[in-house]
Image (cartoon, rainbow, N blue to C red; front, top):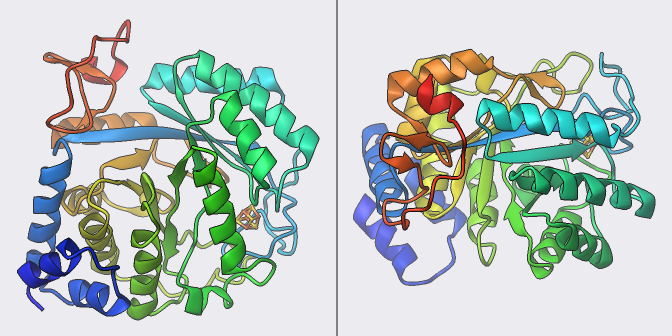
Length: 352
Ligand code: SF4
């Protein structure tokens, strides 16, 4: 199938089939990137990147058995179980993230599902972070309807809950909760009026067809997620996937491109695994349609490139962080977004 007929298939309104997505994957690499860049430019400001900062507010001791995760209590890793972080420390971290240029502050807790008093505590954090002028995102595991509503009321903008992989491969990665459990939580988040952040991981040992299966699940959510993190497995000693084979970097870029084409309006985020990527590979990912990234020194329990290295990369690629100011005023997500008044007193990134 050529790029035009792939595009026509989607314009007909039909759901994405795994086969159609597989055919995108199979396009010549340059054709795939060209198509992804075209779609990207139709829907986004091509040189803008959205920056999120991620803080682990409750680390380790998770009862789930996600095979890639060093926070699972089932695996012997270097991650220590910690208590929920106090509110003042969260506020301090959010202030630092904002000063460094982050637009969104994401808070992650290693829970299967939060208890009522834990949701109360996280709601206080959301209110405080929102009060600093940052967008808020949390990832807390499975939610009940009332919990999603409580988080929304506290001012939550995004809830992250990843599908991880295709339904067919999922059982080889996680056995303690089902794919349907995840879809149910995503539906509750959506029903509560919270934006959805949902993506997956490549390099788990899945086949290309299974990668296509993940993208089909994401693209066929109605509506598809506003934010789609694409993670490259970070192999951590002590986890069952510690010795997995590396995925071909160009296959990772293809996954970004396919996500961009199938979910044109979403923010495709470079997430875990970015630290190990050379700048040239990250640039290819931006070319393929990535326009969001985690930014900061820690990405939950694995390292993330230093702020200065990221800022240098933005300068070399002429990428502008959304929400920061350049000489023409605030950088907006899409070329046709109406100009907004400048909200920042100074721009750490634009000035650097
Ligand atoms: S990925 Fe999340 S749910 Fe799974 S073990 Fe890690 S912290 Fe727990």
